[in-house]
Length: 362
Image (tube, one colour):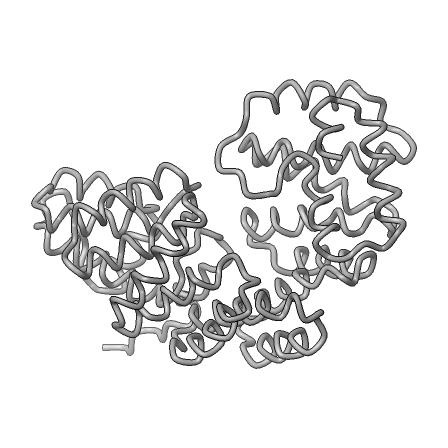
């Protein structure tokens, strides 16, 4: 199907897609069809996407072709980093017939990562499950949404139920996902138990990354580096693994190696907040004050302002390096096991201002 799309034989590609979906394929096939141009793992857009977008937009917007055209246009715009345009196009997915509900996966992710709209995103993910209940990752994302909305009991109950219902070949992936969620909350020992079992299943592409992170947070540096080395040997452009290994190397005093990993994470990543924080700390240790400041200023201004307020210590242009590093360390501490750049995870490590008690009258 992707070969037909790449050759701009769109009618044939989408006809094939309809036939595949009519056969109620397993989750991995549906997830493949969700990304008609790639596997959903690219880091930089290919120039051929511009030509493909032009070819798609020239096609008439009618009949069964309409749904596939909206899907493909949304994916291409997202790949080209045209986020506002991708969001507008993805809104049209919500108006498609129920049988195309699985296409709303993209709208759900776009809403989570750009509008932080958990309610609308959850509606999209439920539509995915209504039309393709085998796509269990939509249930896992609904559990994540419960977690970021402050309902961990409900979130882990959903993950436990999911673990009992998925096919055996997906068990390792669900365990890894549950372990990652425990990592975010700082439950590192519980995370490690899930991730040990997930790694033994050998079915999750990310279990070693998250297990390395759990080892790191528990102070098990050799084990952390072992897992993160293995992860990056298999997935050299895994930005989260690069950030975690860079952090591990930094804490082990291997600063030049840490710098190389964090430089790579910045190159591969999309708004790599955590890479900037760790790299600023490495540069501070190397005596590169100018480099430290350049990375510090790449941390979003609202994050810097919030932690200045939280710590009661403003960082100003003439502040010493120790003031900058103290704030960066505080952000990492608050982040616990979060090193992903998904914006909807922010509520896991930034306390809502509404939860702050007002000052007592003097």
